Image 1 (spheres, helix red, strand yellow):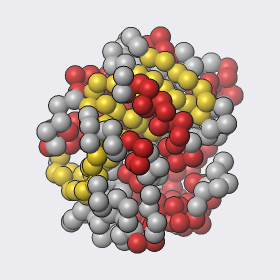
Image 2 (tube, rainbow, N blue to C red):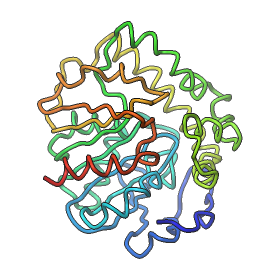
Image 3 (cartoon, rainbow, N blue to C red):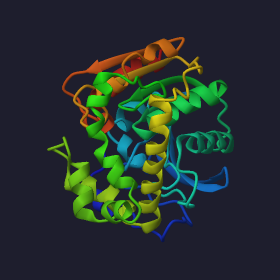
Image 4 (cartoon, rainbow, N blue to C red):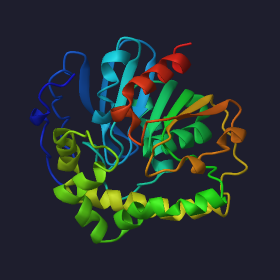
Length: 307
């Protein structure tokens, strides 16, 4: 849909935002780019399309642009709402609140500002974990959820899970004070990591994400988010923090089985924690489903969110 992503807007300054960026070619006819003050931060959101509201929440290290492959197919059936989480894209990076519960509160405040009472929701990676927090904390605001390649709050502590903990090496590196922000803000190591398991990833697309992460405030936000990950993971695996909480929002997880970052074993058994929660494992698809296997995700969204 975008013919010249080299025309993506450049960074406007460290951490804060002053105005909504201009959309790249192919989007401006249908979508608007807005800065909305909600929950005490300036949040960037891209909105457009016709139909019921569908909220799309990205993961690390992307921003709203990760949904570009879904836009042509879905914008005629949904009003797409694609925010940048705090610390990412063109939203503020205030130096605090980089955790899924705050992300969820940000999104609810954004929905209020946009006069959206209830939405359907798709989340990927950190956006997927945030989707579960929204479903648990604000079920009255979320009609249905599709999560793709994201952990859920009931990851089992099993032999298979322990054997796959090595896959989280990147979280330790990204969370390291000094080292983490330094590495993610540098084009070469950032591009190497983003390309893991993705041999066909375009250098131009990598550059779009790398440009935003080069902002020191956003690089620090990345490290803070993964420090949160390292703190919440033991509470989920060992202390079973969410064991007594039940997901009442109808939910489908579409999980690429070739994910090199999140092992399928870490989401096994999650269905028993929801009233209507099903997990589908998709062979041949890896972690970044919205960008690498968009046709599969589009199909599942239509089947579950349009009926």
